[in-house]
Amino acid sequence: MQNLNKYIEHTLLKQDATEKDLIKLFDEAKENDFLGVCVNPCYVKLAKEHLKNTNVKIVTVIGFPLGANTTEVKVFETQKAVSDGADEIDMVINGTKLKDNDKDYIVNEIKAIKQACSGHNLKVIIETDLLNKDEIIRACEYSILGGADFVKTSTGFVKGGAGAKAEDVALMYKTVKDAGLQVKASGGIRDKETAIKMIEAGAVRLGTSSGVKIIS
Image (cartoon, rainbow, N blue to C red; front, side):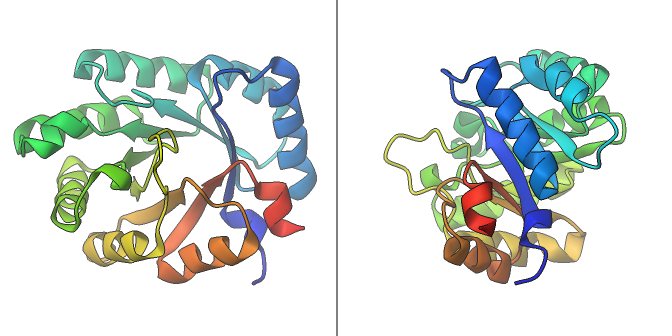
């Protein structure tokens, strides 16, 4: 597959990552012309400093990894990330509210965070490892109603979780494509074969810490 690097958001979200590790991530993103990097919010400024004068997008995560912060906190976190230089926002859906089918809460939260994005792309992480098929569809439908730009499979932080599965990516793509949303697959994408399966299922973005290995 051509230009596989332009699907990849080179990711480092580990709690024990050092600044040296992050700078290595940024250097790899530049060397391999990856589409973007994905880092925790406190490192957005560092990413901005190291990736200036490049086309590498800076992506950060909001309400990560549980999605259980209040909407007000998620909105502030988003505003701060954008002001620090984030190009795209990946927010974690409130899983409890989704399980309880609290449509108004979910939709209103996504709307509020999208507004705080100031025109930047918003991806909604729905955490497919914790959902059945009906809940995946529902999460996608609520993301459409909230005005999101993408739905995303996973945080990669569910203990024992498989992360992105091609069948879930395909279901998400089928649910959102007519509304103009796109799909990001993340979690467990560690080789070229898996990456291509995700793209064939409908993903246009891949969140992975194995970007260099995948394109080698």
